[in-house]
Length: 223
Length: 223
Image 1 (cartoon, rainbow over the protein chains, first blue to last red):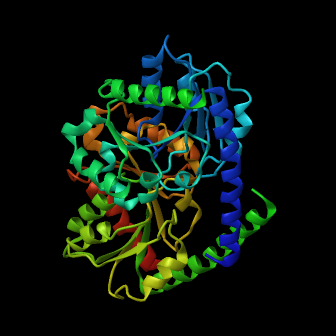
Image 2 (cartoon, each protein chain N blue to C red; image 1 turned 30 degrees about the vertical axis):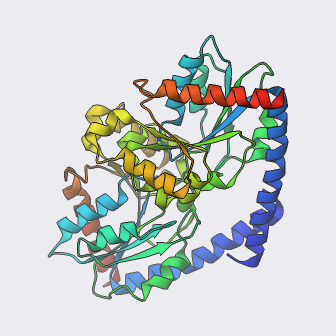
């Protein structure tokens, strides 16, 4: 990259970092746990949120910010579950930025427990943009292959939690979840790893409990 | 984006366009058909190339340029099939650029028929970068879902050919190949559509024939 390009990128990231810090402070003060979901297209982010909405129902209130290049499809799927959702269409941009989230934040009801942000489907670029989340989850679906963490390291390095999705397809695929997890853990020791089939519900209780525990920690830290 | 950012992006794309035009001219003069493969991570680009190498064996000579953020894994898989392969590791960058391809081009043997470029796994950013290819193929794997073309339109709009991969998983998935194809064709009328399972070989003959016909056209145009 040219010096000019590098300086523009650095300016963008610095501006994003400031906006993200403001969002994080705002959400902490409201006692809302914010989770940023990152993955390739079609790894199952929306289906995971649909499944979580069923688990949280009547116990926790969630809201969702959907990031996509085009269409309102994902927000419509979430709204169909009775969950408030805002669609950000980036119109070509390959990732969400904190200022895009900031513009929506005023509309998010104060009385929620969880704010999930589903990033644009892209295992590369979103990893560089802090959105003010408390927890960053990277999803890796079994059909993508167990060799992906080392090939796309930044997404795994920047995450707090790895969710191996579509476990219902394990019998039909050359995918070794232990290998995928070990490779991700070599990049990011301490990464929490979950294996789920959001379609069948397998592993979803443990994942939901992880978010509930994080919410309790956030609120006790803020109390 | 700021005016400064927009101008840097425009400069980058203009520089890339010039480099791509030089590569296209060079490869046409050598009678080599260049194909750029775009898709999400794990859609099956490398497996498709492995399968093609078996089909072309003893009849056509191919070479492969592999683009990845990190690791030599894909080039090693291709070399294991006896195919010359060069790995470009972008070190964080989310797409290949023509100048990266240009640097490798001198090492590519003159006496080949096909040069395949496997782009970085990313359904967004690589779509904006012409690499000097004759044919651009976008792969969409069945587990990614049939709703992806409208959500990631640029990749489909910029492609000549859509390859629906992992057809062996159709029985296990809520994926309608006709719906995916229709949505892609609404974005890009005239797109050639193939459905394959590179693992099982289904549909690979038709795809190989498409590349062979394009090679013949390229050579008769250059004669």
